[in-house]
Image (cartoon, rainbow, N blue to C red):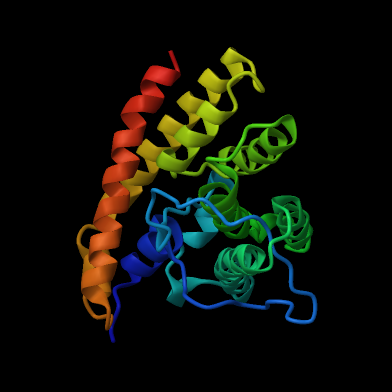
Length: 245
């Protein structure tokens, strides 16, 4: 398939990671489990993953023009994002089956994230954080310990310029009283900015993302999930603007 270079550099690396089914690198010798996770309102099949400004210059170089160092950087970032998202979901699934506390998964995920190289960890941090928040932490009783965990993953998303406005809106609402009103408002404003930048980059790719998705065996499911997720993100931006005032 002759995929346009522009699609590879903008959509695949900036637009979103398609979160793969199954698990990557799961530690079957040391399974863990937590409380049954809350049903996530967002489509976890698609998570919008941003490329922070610090990495953008390298990631937007067309593959055919990258130096070996630049290509290694891009490959590492993609692998990290796919691995971390799938591994986190696997830990949560095992947790629900075995019935241990959410704190066990939290410890495992933080330890996993610490193993990634700092400069290429942005995809891993976003994928894992979105899974932890959307599938496990949000919706439970807001004890201080749980709020600390929500704050930790929310901060990772903010630091990586995440455009996942729907998840961040729920996170920031959960952090009221744990973070100051000013900190919540500032985080909301940052999320609006990051999401708008992300959508402008997504627009550069035009219809190429949908073209690639239509070639997949489960194309109707993927296209529907993508459309619903993007709508949820856009709606959340409106609420975040109000929260930032």
